[in-house]
Picture 1 (tube, rainbow, N blue to C red):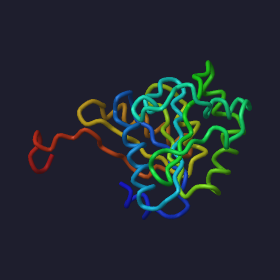
Picture 2 (cartoon, rainbow, N blue to C red; picture 1 turned 90 degrees about the vertical axis):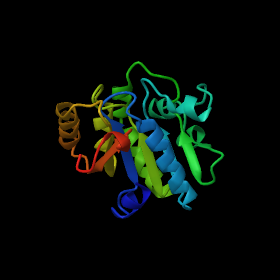
Picture 3 (tube, rainbow, N blue to C red; picture 1 turned 135 degrees about the vertical axis):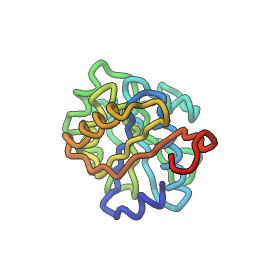
Length: 194
């Protein structure tokens, strides 16, 4: 995945990762992609933009009381006070902050575009863990500001119709779709040709 992304071109620095539904594995994909990019000597910012149901903080063992994206978008904090270093060299994290009542409205504010523009200058990659687009529109709002988007699908869980609908929503946001990550594939269950 890292190699494929690097070969899409240097203009794809800000990448929105979304899925059709919860538990498709997009937060794990986002974190592991950010980590492996950082391990490859890239300065990376991982933005936890799932301001409705973030699981990233629990998975990486970070306190939910940190100031983060919601604080910045609401104008309560400046950007540098919401970005934290991690125990992975060159990997930085902007957590969600408090869960706001109006995440879509906050994401639509000019401060989101400002955040991504400033991040493009300061980091080699910005990986955005967005909410599932099959459930809320937030990821489409983020994708229209990002350089590229990746859709995570969980094998055997998501219907073709739902996947097509989420792809259509990304296209309506004028998102540059890099491709799909098919997650949780059990290769033992499928013979050659499936």
